[in-house]
Image (cartoon, one colour):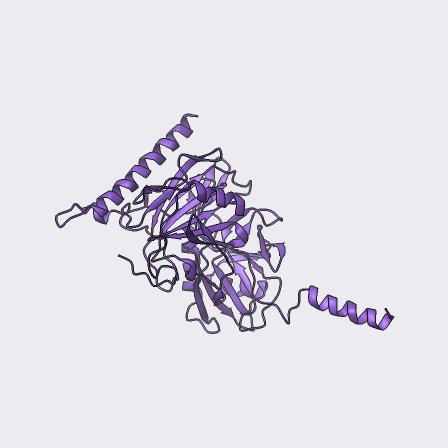
Length: 197
Length: 210
């Protein structure tokens, strides 16, 4: 129990650091501190499903900001929220919990980013909370394109992911409450033509 | 219906329903799985070998160009063309902290330039050696030195190791670097979480072994 409290406290602390990083980044001036260069500073809005989702607690927050590698089609740059836990296999095989939410900058990840064998990756387009969205991976991945963010949800199926999408609320850079309409994607974002700031 | 017409109808039905190598396209799940239902994701797929890329051919070239050991089997399951099957080849750079790859040929070949394809999940993993935990894929995250991760996640390191081994080598055309977006993170036995950045590399396998 104490361990879970510690994980939750660490998650809250990291979330606060991310939010502060966003605040510092957005508020930086000519003589601003070096926080603008912090790896926790993000220039895109953040969304999560809150402290828990359908009985699964927020168990971890990831911030990945990787160095771009030559020849790689993608570079990790996201803030991730994990809900629930899982049991690693007896042989050490990895596992994944019931819900992960990753927030990427729309200028780096969007609907038109994906190909498979040089052809567009299969997807199902829909509208979620007024914003364009797409299912990938046979309904186990839902992406919502809003403002300068791409919200990527990994879950167990279409209905669960739609409920998770409904539960999203703004963490930083957005005041959206669960169920609120989300802003349309920034101009050019869906086509992969949005420049990074 | 006459026997002849029945035979023709049956043949037409079979032609429409059976997987056909002559009409197949590249198809693959985006992850390997722990169980034979292919509903228990474990590792992201980050490399595709094409051309003459049977599983054994791919293993032969991976072993030659990396110096790794390996053989048949290797665990985990892969889905393609609606079929879930066990990994058929594996290779690794050692016993303890190491690079490791599991592979499986896709069920059908492809009628275009891709031809015979095998997918793989290369990764770098640390040897843990206690608490029932033996190998754990390196995590990615800002907990690593600022300003960037030094080496990115173990899945990204594994893909890069394959790139370094095959790029520029005769017969191993580097055809594609594409984004599959398969960035879901996976818990490891040391409680770290690791995921790919979504990149998938396509390397050709030639029509001969080393």
